[in-house]
Length: 168
Image (tube, rainbow, N blue to C red; front, side):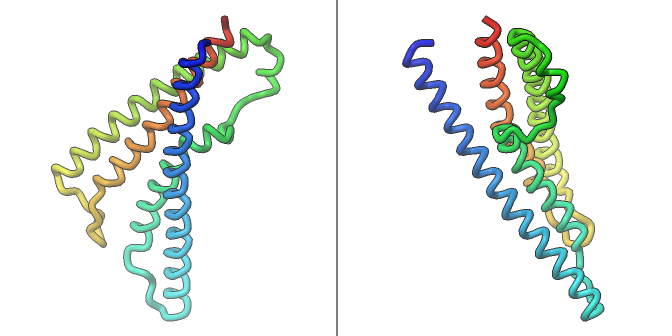
């Protein structure tokens, strides 16, 4: 690999990592908000006999923000599930082929997930769909899912390239 390609590749990879880290930070803030919502709901219902109205709606929406935000960074950190005891028995080229195949499948899944989430966001926006009790619009959360799939797509492309280079 020449120096220009390596520099561009490294800069792109660093940018994707930074975007993924920001998505994860937003997800972490959302997780803290979910814990606070649950705390307020429990204290309100047990102590004051007045639960937080729409707490289940709030918690459900915040879960979308939390889970989607952590997708790409969990892949970067290696927190994904993998069956290593079988994988370790393979030769290096076999591992590279399986990594390439897994990245290709993941890429296909996340491209479709991002595309369908964008479409769903536009549909929800057009129809004005909102939560039942609090009336929170749902389309921003569909767009958030689609947006969080984009760094994952980039990570999987990088994984495919590196797996292909390992095969050679």
